[in-house]
Amino acid sequence: MAHAQAVILCRPAGQNEALAERLRATGREVLSLPALTLTASFEEPLPSLSDVDLVVFVSGNAARFFLDRRLREAPDAVWPAHVAAATVGPGSAAAVRAHPAFGVASELVTPPACAAQFDSEALWDALQARQHPLRKVLIVRGTQGRDWLAGRLRAAGVEVCIHTAYRRDPAPWAPHACAMLQGLAARQAPAVWLLTSVEGVDALLTRTREHGLTDWWLQGRFVVTHPRIAAHVTAVWQAISAEHGPTDAAIVLQTCPAGDDAVVAAIESLA
Image 1 (cartoon, rainbow, N blue to C red):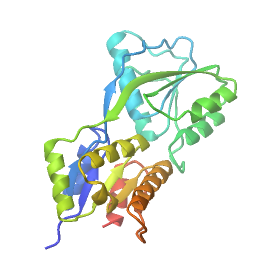
Image 2: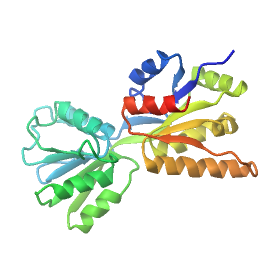
Image 3: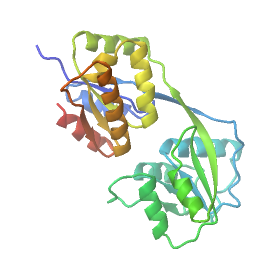
Image 4: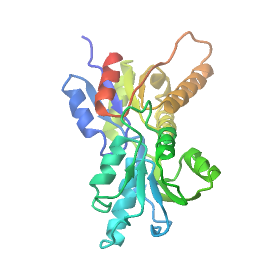
């Protein structure tokens, strides 16, 4: 008897539930397995917004941690009318707009819905199209992050400050998750893995090595949400495969937008 397709969702905690239920409704076996644990960072004081022109939130998580802290520490503070915000995609933009610590009428810059990718490059294009010169920009991110946008802004003569709003650490695996993964590996049932960050890929591989599941992981199929993640997964997969000797096997991978509809379609294409 054939087993249901197994899907492993590696987005951070709190971001997998709706997708998991949707996939289970199609008969799939689903495990929510966050690759990273996200926690607020208080190592830096909350920056003032009085002298910045733009706040860039590199992700929905960056926006949530920053705005939650601002609401706690300065509950009566009003978002300055002259300060615009920017995000790399529509999901993050919606989270910012809905947050009570953000100004209802404040400008929010994000790539257009027709953008080929939602990333720093697309946001840079959107900022270039905006007819407002920038003097100082605050970039809000996690402990690790790309410096591409900061570099572009500095090259254009903009003062850039970076604020670390949260930490990203490899997430531990709960006993029930380990048991499910070991069971899948024992019956040689390849899983479909949803991977949404380069750091998450590396954290996941650390755990698979710890639990002796690397060989089984190589048999998996992968859904990723950006070409950079696809390139990283492919490089890592090829490097680990090479350690096992010559092989004719090839990685099975789909790249798709980050929204649930696109993710479900990509997973279904790998059935």
